[in-house]
Image (tube, rainbow, N blue to C red):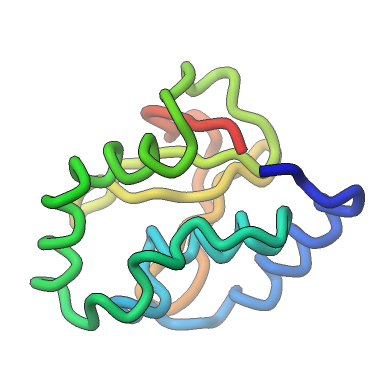
Length: 133
């Protein structure tokens, strides 16, 4: 995937547009949030094959189980993980949440993650793994 020349602007606009969008399985969950962010920066939707396959937590767990979990899904889309310290703006990171592991986007010195009521921001130090976009 190649990023558009203006990908930083596109990423900022994407995060701002999603700021108050509530969590929804199969529409606005952590994996599809990241896929939508990648699409905004590259024009390629890495989540296309999973869209419409689930709309519940049970369905999401099945998709994750069939694809190696949250980390496996990110690796399938983006290749092998890199050390979290090498994550840069626009890259994908893995964070721990009270509900378990979640994918999120590095937006510089912070991480943007899909939360229950909209985007939640975390310090970059919260990244447990990372993948280059």
